[in-house]
Length: 256
Image 1 (cartoon, rainbow, N blue to C red):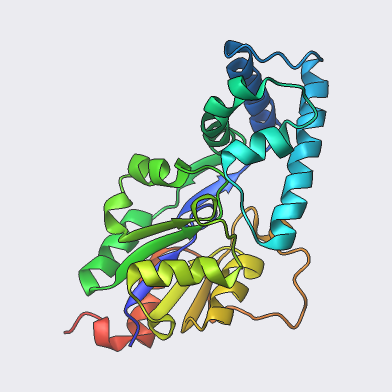
Image 2: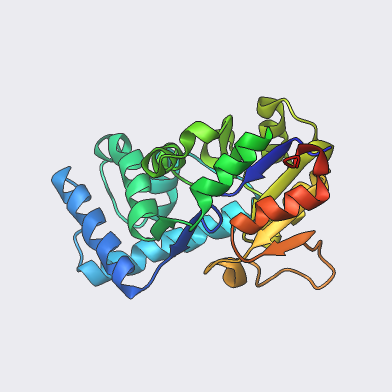
């Protein structure tokens, strides 16, 4: 019997996208915070962005290649802003602020249609619910869940920056399972990418893995091989998850 449903955050419980406008806005706000704390890049705004982007790409290559995550106090001085000779003592206290700012400004985020109703329906059926998210901010996922008014549905929230592991590393799923006190064969994972959200839980032994596609799905899955694990179900909306679970797991489906 399936007892537990675990969700990805960005692209799954929430719609997420970025464009030139969000990039300009995050550049403006980052520079504002840095300068307010006595940290002057000493270059044009456009050059600042280019050098920052080089650092971001370098970190992403390391992080995704090793399936590991560092904390903001390491990411920002040692990777993202490594091209600048910033005073480390001034920079370290604001690294979490910068990390959260990046997450909420570089990306436009909004709760997916039907998310709250879907979570309530699963809770009413007796499912245990939680989140496993790749996020380079320590607190962003918790804050966003609060902002959406859905944190109360979650029995556990497991975040890569806290655990040190990124999906699809098996350990981030195992940590969540231990915290949820759940067995993998009782679990369903729902996410928007094959590379992280289907391959990851499948290799740990989750009973089912479900995909709901997002703006980020194709770019994150660009290197997925044709013989990689495939989702047990692809849904077009979150309410479809409830209908499907009622079919495959009748033990928790409403009676009558």
